[in-house]
Length: 103
Image 1 (cartoon, rainbow, N blue to C red):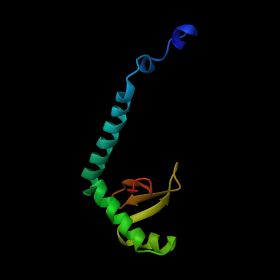
Image 2 (tube, rainbow, N blue to C red; image 1 turned 90 degrees about the vertical axis):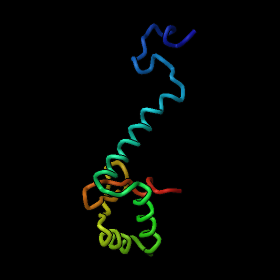
Image 3 (cartoon, one colour; image 1 turned 45 degrees about the vertical axis):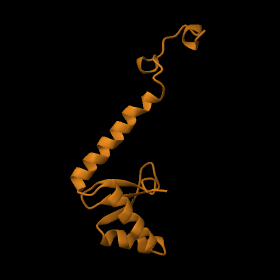
Image 4 (cartoon, helix red, strand yellow; image 1 turned 45 degrees about the horizontal axis):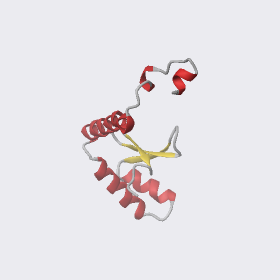
């Protein structure tokens, strides 16, 4: 007996059908679209941005010098709303830091 019938309640429309792993595809497509739009606005790919930020991080010894290097490269290190820090590009694009970096 499924729990929906056992409780005598109807699940919300989005939960009525078990789509398996397919349910994650919409989220991935949305993320890909966001990255594509960010690339169009900034002129730099996600991979290029990751490589540049990683290089800047590796060239510094402390947070202060990292913030200075970021600023020299056209970025700003800022406090995020839901993350400790984000990197803001000169065109206003926000990059999550360091979650967006490769492992």
